[in-house]
Image (cartoon, rainbow, N blue to C red; front, side):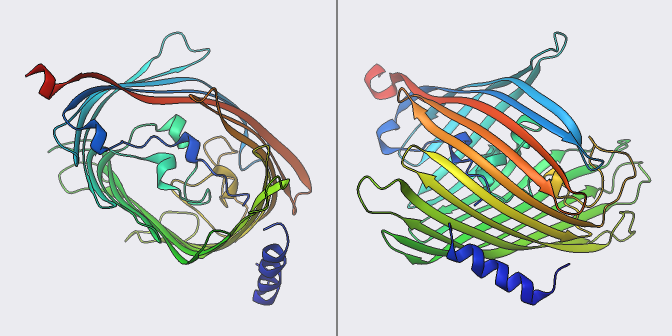
Amino acid sequence: MMRIQNWVILIFLFAGTTISAQINNQLLENPINVKDSLQQKVLLSIQSNNFFKNNEYFGKISTGYTLMGSQLGAQFAYMPNAFVRLQAGAFFQKDFGNDTSLLVKPILSCKIQKNGYSVIFGSLEGNISHRLIEPLYNYERFISNPIENGLQIKVDKEKLWSDTWLQWERMQYPGSTFQEEFSVGHHTDFSIIKQKQWELSIPLQFLVSHKGGQIDIDTTPLKTIANAAIGFKVHFNNQREGAFIKSLSTENYYTLFNDLSPTKTLTFKQGSGLYINATAISKYDIAASVGYWNASQFLASRGGYLFQSEASIYGTPGYVQANRNLLFFRVLYARKVFNVLDVNVRFEPYYDLDAATFEYSYSVFFTYKSDFTLFNVNKRK
């Protein structure tokens, strides 16, 4: 790891120039809308996402692979009043090039929301909606693990955004031959300064994953992995009309990993990393980003593959690279087309400073989501 003095210099260099290679995925989020105008209505909710992501990687941590297919969520929803939404439906995912498999999952949710506070029981506003950084949470999980179920508490106020959740991933029963699995996460973003042009906020994130249980017959030692990140974000909105650069931002995080398992079986027991990001967004909705990742013995159960200190499921089995030293460059385009379709186009190269190798990925996402009113319960009465 670099000495702390060098880290401080780097942070201030980034904050002083085009002030996040941390990707803005908000157009890919799928919130459960609770609105006063929808009360006493029965709705049909449609969410569609078409994805193509090609990773041209050749390293031992992760080699190349391609994700391409379509997702569709269809649900019936009912709002008995302005604060509660009940919905049930199904999620479908088809991976192109696979004619024998279709993923189908039920969706059941109850959301209560009032005055910026909300509670969700059932299918969560998960994956990308947690807004975790990539070292802690691989954004590809909205493709590989699209549905999260459990309990979620959210806060969305003027100076505070918070998401706390329990995702129950695998249920066990007496005599099960496998362990139960769940994860607990939290993300708070607190704005210290929030003005029209400037915003300074402090994000705090953590994610704990657990495999264990007491009623199974699996003798595998239980496993608990904890990751955390804390840092600061600065965002500048250019108020000058017609300006080419409409916003600048920086996101900088110190990350931690700790194996909390009673019996340590992982390659490393603990580690850390520093993630520095900078982004400029033009008036044409094209963003240019640069980021730097330096980590030592860092592992994350849900993290992006490139950020790990050992080989991923796509890498060389058993390969370990304790220190990671990566420079990311990204060009992103995100825009709502024809007022209905969210389009994301990305080119994401990175340079491994230790191995002196240059690799890249590119992706395209077409996302559509909308609620349609089928009928008003009051009127039918």
